Every structure is written in structure tokens, then in C-alpha cells.
Image (tube, rainbow, N blue to C red; front, side):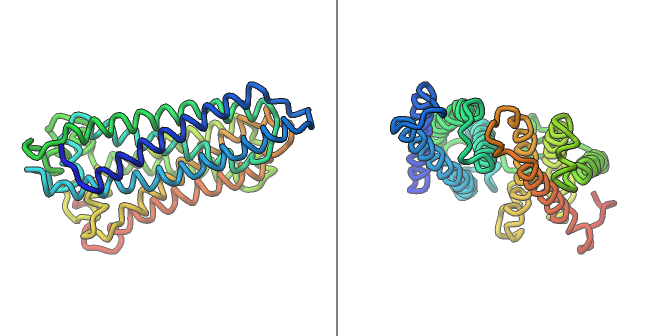
Length: 341
């Protein structure tokens, strides 16, 4: 086990977040069992105030979880100096059985919490029983992921040992190596570009048509919202493949260097942070636009108006455009060209 102040801080933060999420979920479940929006008595007003407190608390949990994910990546990169064979965070994560599963759970928790926060922001103050129940029942998934995050993170750091020889990112993301990273690195860069730009173009075309105005969102109906949400998820998947197959090599100006974690390093100007943030914004806002449209039949108060979907959809389109701009930048301004991939 490797123990540093940063590792201890991460462990304490993850356990605290899981505890807060479980307590908030239990509180909301108790309140929903006695939810009577038609009553104007003091008991119902107290329940509404407590539910608002739960929602505010969970909003704070989201932002702390985002900071925890960034801190985890920083710690993983810092710990590579203590592990033989590791050159960046990729090697640190490969040094334990739970490294990459832990990263996947952290990302999933952040996505689900972010999606909940966006939907809740657009429907804040809406007291329709169906909408309130749908939002707060979904907290079970958020709390479950945060509990899994805390438990697996403790197990991962407990098993991490400086005596273990691990693999560097050049090995993990090398064609022929056993693992998902090698399979992504083996994707032909031109094929990766064709799939990504085809999906991006389709997503932008559908989004541009749907998110012209609030009335266009209304006319497109629920199927249009589901279509865009699905395209946003597919485009994000293609973008992740693109990062490994051609975006990272273009930024490194090295066709054999596919590591997505080195983009977070100082040597690359920390370009990975805005790159991944833009992609996350495109995905989350796109999914939230679909969720808002799906929840509108449950909203008797009219809080989820088409304009909410419009804001989220435009935010998603902007996120994908920003990601693409950062991804193609080195192909436009450096000596490294598409043919070098």
C-alpha cells in the first residue's frame, strides 16, 4: 500500500461523499413517502424545504465529485514516480486490478450526477409528484455509484505496491498488447476520423435543426429529443476512440504515442483538461436535453418548457464544436499532418 497525504485525502473525500449521498437519498425517500403537494399545511411546507435542502446538498456533491476526479488523475500521475515501469497515470492505473474499473466508475458517477444536476436545475421549484419522484428515485443510482467508488478506491490504494512492476503508457496503448487500450490504439486513424466526423456532422445537423428555436424543439417532439441524446452518446464514444487513435498522436506529433493521459501533463500545456471538459459538456447537455423532453409529461407545473431543452441542446452543440476545435488544432498549425498518422 502506498500512503501519501493526497491518497488519504482522496479516501476521506470519497467516503464522505458516499455517506452524504446515501443520507440525502434516504431523506428524500422518506419525504416522498409523505409527499402531498396539494396540502398547504406546515408539514408539507417543511417537507418542501427539506427536499430543497437535499437538492442543494447534492448539487454540492456533484462539484466535489468533479474535483475528486481531477484530483484522482493528478494523484495517479504523481504516483507513477513510485512505481517501476510507470511513466504517467496510465501506468499507475495498470499497477492494480481495480485501477481502470475505478476510473470508469468515477466517470460514470460524474456523468449520472451531472445529468441529474442539469435536469434538477431546469426543474427547480417544480412540485409535481411524478416529476419529483422521478428525479429523486434516480438518486439511488448516484448514491450507488458513489458508494462503489469509495469502496473500490480504498481497495485499489490498499493493493497498490511499489514492489510491483507495471506497464508504461507506451505498452498499455500499443497495438498487440492485451487490453482495451491496445485495441483502441490499433484503430486505423483514418477510419477513426471518418466515423467521428460522420457522427459529428449528423449530430450537428440534427441539433442545428432541432435547436434553432423553442418552437422547433416543440415541433420535433419527444422522438427528436431521444434521437439527439442517442447521437450525443454515440459521438462521445467515437470521440473517445478518436482521442486514442489520432487526436493524441497529433498533439504529441508522434504517430506511435496514443496515451490519452499524457494530454493532461504540463508538457502538453494541460490541453487534456479543456478537451475532455468540452466533450463532457457535449454529452451531458445532450443527454439532459433528452431527459428534459422525456420528463415533460410528468411536469404539471410547466417548469420544463421548450426553452430549457433549447438551452441544453445549444450547450451540447457548443461542447462538441469546442472539442473538435481543440482536437484538430495540431493538424492545422503544426508540421504534423493527417498523412503522418
